[in-house]
Image (cartoon, rainbow, N blue to C red):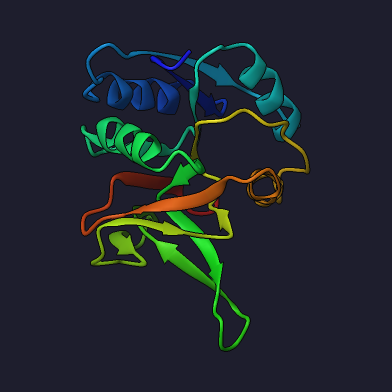
Amino acid sequence: MDNQIFFIIIGSDQWVISENICYLNNLVIPENISAEYMVLDSDSIPQALDTAMNESAAKYKVYMDENVFITDKNFLTKALKIFNEQPDIGMLGVKGFSKESDTGKMKVQGHYVYRCNDITMPCMKEVYETKNNGTLEVMALDKHFMMTSVDTKWYGDSNNFNIIKSVGLRNIGYRTAILMEEKASVLFDNGILGE
């Protein structure tokens, strides 16, 4: 259904998940749109994502790790606008990978706020800061946060399902893109190092 967003949170730490849901509950939900969520705890992530995807008729699905928090309250409004204005975008994220044309090397594009909680050295920093606004087409999205507007089967394993999904979408005529903004929309909290 075009007026629904379905959040699929991957994880098992109930405290972190409850915190994540607090962030989701603080998002601005655009008018005439409803939002639901479900939590997945699975060792076989692609198969679990595929099962979760088929549980909802929502057109828009957000796949995210438990330790990814959407900090921009207007993110959904921005994302839906992008999907509506650029219907050939099948998957949107905030960080992805592109190939440099001159060297052929993979380059990280986009950014999120990254927080690591090391007992000896706490840090919080913007990763791969960008000053551009709009969208940028990428070869694949970072697997921690992905939003889709079209359903296709999930394949691969826990290390490459995001890449295979991006390639699969491209093969049926959809682009994969990242939201490029001066300020990061998402916080990635990796917890205490060494855990």
